[in-house]
Length: 368
Ligand code: SF4
Image 1 (tube, rainbow, N blue to C red):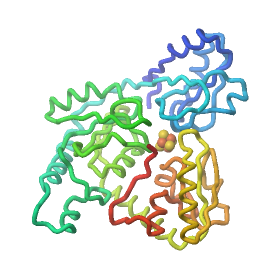
Image 2 (cartoon, helix red, strand yellow):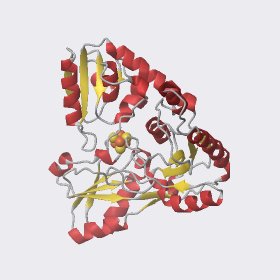
Image 3 (tube, rainbow, N blue to C red):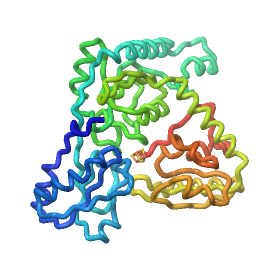
């Protein structure tokens, strides 16, 4: 990754610090950009009379706004970089700072994937609503990548991206339309700020007009979540490298097999640790309490464990048989192999207890 090609838009922050005469400001920077944090601190301290303290703990999203500890330190403003505001209030005045990357990858390399995926979506839609199929036959024919029997009303291309590439969406919409695709830039719910934005825990812009997706971004974190959530074919174009690829159905199947194995392993468990995230945008207290009640209804024990960070070294030693995670949903999905005991999502617990049916298709654990 070429860090010099990121644009950190500090002007608004500097103006706000000067206007409000702030003396102590906290800077919160995502992991991938921490190498440049000291440079940013220099820039802010040079342009204003404020001192800057870096909130140096890991930060993976706007769910993770620094709050009361910084207030105790005397911080008057938090500058949160590289994520957008979500539907939470950390209790601290916070300035969100956009970071954009100037990479502009060539569309040509991803077109073969998009053509193949549109054909898959068309085949699925053309199966239509057959009149002479039994319910089982219709379900088998409409199954998406995660086993749901959802139908499509259209085969539009959903164009999404990670936040530092969202400025590319208007020009990519034009290029894709010129290449013959009918493009939708989906707008999600309150946790998302921008059209086409996706988070690892929220893909709420999806609808039944969208038959397949193009993701502008790097890595497979968002693509895995998007396919687990939507069940739809997904192509990926990486603005950092120009590489094009797709999220393979085999990969999704492997994840689903692993999830099913963890559900089966949890069925015999009697004592569960229920993880509650302490980060403002991960705290799902009501859900955690509902899981505890559900376990009790099934004659099992649930212990509520509140944590800021979740890791194997922080929970594996508790004398429980399995864990249910209500903090960041991706901890259970992406990190499950790191834990010695089954770590499952709330939906997966409901399946393990027989309250929900796996046969209806996998349900991604979304934070709305
Ligand atoms: S995926 Fe996890 S880290 Fe990312 S925004 Fe959602 S809760 Fe936060």
